[in-house]
Each structure stands twice: as structure tokens, then as C-alpha cells.
Length: 90
Ligand SMILES: Cc1cc2nc3c(=O)[nH]c(=O)nc-3n(C[C@H](O)[C@H](O)[C@H](O)COP(=O)(O)OP(=O)(O)OC[C@H]3O[C@@H](n4cnc5c(N)ncnc54)[C@H](O)[C@@H]3O)c2cc1C
Image (cartoon, rainbow, N blue to C red):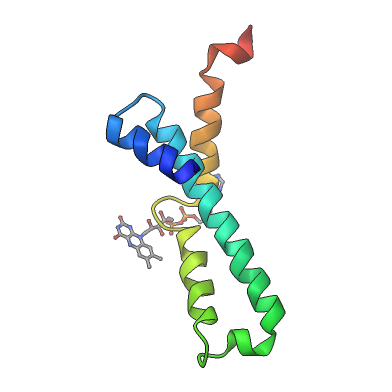
């Protein structure tokens, strides 16, 4: 839902598009990483072997926490956006 919301904001060129895309990128990649990491825990050593696609999934999702701006940088973008909102200073 968050990814779709961000994509819609981008398409509509809304003022919150940058913050929403940063939230979506961080949330989606961190959660996917947790899912794949959990799957590897279940499969044990087999999850690590090239005989199965899971090791590729793990490498692919790990780099997406880094690519296009790391998730730490996404958090910085979101926090900067929140700090500019009047609601926090009233
Ligand atoms: C496979 C691959 C393909 C790529 N393709 C492209 C491409 O097509 N075009 C392109 O332009 N780039 C590309 N990149 C580069 C990619 O965008 C950068 O790797 C990414 O933005 C992170 O920058 P960096 O590697 O310099 O890490 P750094 O910025 O050096 O970060 C290192 C670590 O420090 C942390 N960090 C940095 N600054 C802060 C901060 N202010 N607060 C907290 N933590 C911080 C980061 O989160 C990270 O954990 C690619 C990288 C890879 C691995």
C-alpha cells in the first residue's frame, strides 16, 4: 500500500512525493529483507547454497537497502520532511 501510495504521489507530482517515496523504499526493502532472512533461517544451510534461489534473493534485497540512496539516508529525508511540518511546533 505504501509503495502504491508513493507511486501515485510521484505520478501526480504532489509536494509529499519525496517523503513518501523515501518511506516506501525504506519500508519495502527492510521488510523484504526480514522475510528473506527468515526464510534462510528456516532452510538453514540449503538456503545459502546456489542450488536454490534464496541466496540470490538475499543478495538482491540486501543491495536494495543500499542502492538509490541507503535506507539511513531515506530516514534522514523523512525526518527532515517531518521537521518542516508546522504540526510539530504548535
Ligand atoms: C550494484 C550497484 C549498482 C549501482 N548502480 C548505480 C547507478 O546505476 N547509478 C548511480 O548513480 N549509482 C549506483 N550505485 C551507487 C549507489 O547508489 C550507492 O552505492 C549508494 O547511494 C550508497 O552510496 P555509497 O556506496 O557511497 O555509500 P556511503 O554513502 O559511503 O554509505 C556508507 C554507509 O554509511 C551510511 N551513511 C552515509 N551517510 C550517512 C548519514 N548521513 N547518516 C547515517 N548513515 C549514513 C550509509 O547508510 C551506509 O551504511 C550502485 C551501487 C551498487 C552496489
